[in-house]
Image (tube, rainbow, N blue to C red):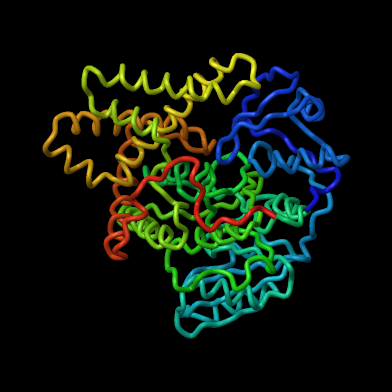
Length: 477
């Protein structure tokens, strides 16, 4: 379907241009990463400022290609989006105050609160009545998925905004989401989840910059096995017609990831819009925080069973896997062999890049990026997904101990450097961040292995080969 007239798209800041031999160029990036060649007409339409305004069939087709590849994102001010009156906010709640959240809702939106067995239903009813909303009462708790679905069924508007009771929308949060729905093929848009201030304590500061709910400051196409592979149900705007009956009530964790993967598999477009910000009251009590991280990990096994190939711990090509294995061996021949493997891969790749100027240099650059990305994945899996195996190896092997120690320190400090400025009001020191990050990984990995054992399914622990798409994915409509 057509991109709306007047929409502007802007290249993702991570995209790199490579010069072509025919006067055109190629764009490197996207979700998942790819190389897209632009003919001279398309390059001229995009211009030197990396922006494109949809005005005719050429720009419309180019915009759709760039958007669907994750190479570009809609710029603010998309014309023709729906209004606030077309939205119903659905809030599941159990034994939590609502006044803080309900005070932030625009008066134009509808409101359905699902009381999931609260001990004081009168307090819930009074808060919702003051906000001119509707209450649905579950006498006994049925869980957040069932509560969201009850609200979804009761909504009479074409759009539904799910908000958890422990979030507080910030500023002009709804309109940036609505803009994206000017594109009739977009079924879901999610805001950025940030920390609710004031932030206190070491874990509070860590969560402010490193929460798994915060998917970062950059817009994205939501695609499995990409930088933004899911969005949390704590805040998401959906088309009611697209989500059907909503969340799977048999899933008690990762039901939001399951919904995202189902929508993607059905061919819908999904977008992440960080200009819209919703603050979340993070858990920061040590025991509750660690158990919540482990609980998230238990969701990987049922997801891997339902969506084969969509949630692997690593996505590696054969040559990057071989190069990383050579380095992990820590022998005298390790680096020369890894370099040789990379050089061979680059030479083979250069034959596919004949349309570029300097195909060998471009291939070496791409191979280097591929190897560095693979090394990061291997290090992350070693410390997070597969740490029980790494711990056992470290008990019997000096080389394994050295690899785990170097990876733990290097990855932790690198993670601190990457995320240290995500919240302008919070400063974290590298040592505290490193310790919290390692505890975070231990918790998630423990939950992951527990889920794999209880479900008797190791799919969530197994890497997949790059280039192999997740199974059951339909073409984007």
